[in-house]
Image 1 (cartoon, helix red, strand yellow):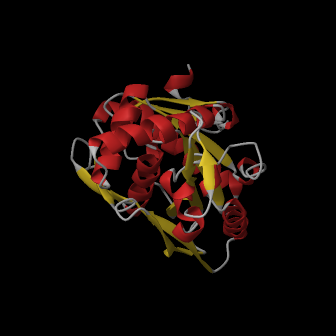
Image 2: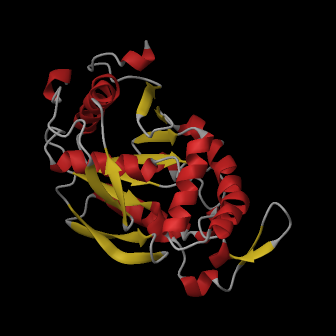
Length: 280
């Protein structure tokens, strides 16, 4: 695919574009330099890989809590609706919809690194709080491209999964699934990473991650003290676990402290695409 098929200066550059992510509003603002150096080469490669795939392509997007992976997939989904990606019908799907129901989490316990035991509904987001067999079942069905299927969403304001929130039509040829533990190689997650045709890892500076998490928790109703405790005892231990899965990815997306993409590094670049300047 020629890079020229991706608009060199789309109308939304330097504009605040509202996105709704898991029930929370976030502003997207892409600068011209970021678009030219990072987004256009990445999108060119992504569209070419989908064409080479010849069927619905599944992309896994992992990263630590607060790294911006949900934001990244929603940016892509929004661009697809604006015809920025030629012949691509894209859907963004969260792993968070596969949290166990509150009734289950309230009955189970998890031991933290500091020795404390918490009910799982008090540390939601840890690996054991997800229904991984159900996630695996949905991923395999997603790859089969049924005429219609539903995917659960997640509402960060109400802190609960929303069953059948996202309807997926067979016309979708690029499915982006984002979640912390998609590349985790331990029971019951082993083999999940292998379902994806492409694996992307999103990372951001640690200070930005902590700020993002604090803001997210407080916007969701926590006090400053509650948010700090959650980040320290739940989010950061989870982040260390997720960081160990980065080597599973074929693409590394790096964000700067302002949330802009500062680098896109491919393990291998599609041979028919133009070189990525970050790989040179």
